[in-house]
Image (cartoon, rainbow over all chains, first blue to last red; front, side, top):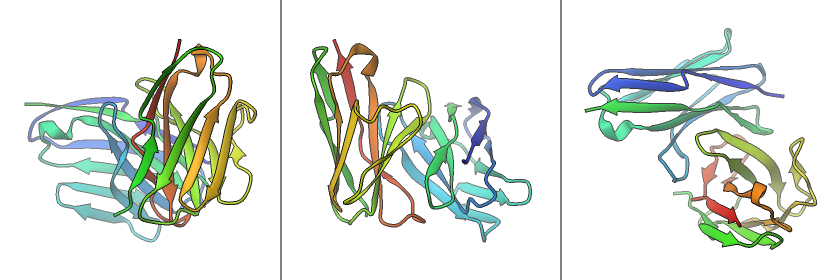
Length: 110
Length: 115
């Protein structure tokens, strides 16, 4: 089955700096890679996703890159703001089931 | 949008009680619903995958008789924690998808505390 590893587990940045979170996956058949943001005690919310036929996708301050050969994908947040502080989860799926990374706790210091 | 409603949001009950949690997709038909368990400061652990009209597929290590899942319609799945004990205390979250290749939409979660 799919195995997703996520790094780092915690990340602290100064407001305005960039944050990068990296994930690797094991199943070469995985074709869909969403990223979720979860604030304390709340539901995970989809913030961006990418499919295997695309190498990069951007939505305002958030971007995701995918390297299928290396089986890794990354989340990039630019110009971070305090409200970006949350736990971020990457995930990978081959349409059968979705596996989540362990999560990254991002803290943006004002 | 794609709204998933989960109820109740918080349950406190005595050991030995059975607790039912409902997960509803409000504005779309969900071919598949998922049930997760989340421990404090940890990731989402998939418990089972539920398809409408068929038996749920449980992950290894998840007791089928302990965590009963029913997916009676394309908009409703239920998780019943039978004879709950303190070690079952956790945050349970459901999610639903229209199709397998589309994003999962999560409910608000249920915080279960067994005394």
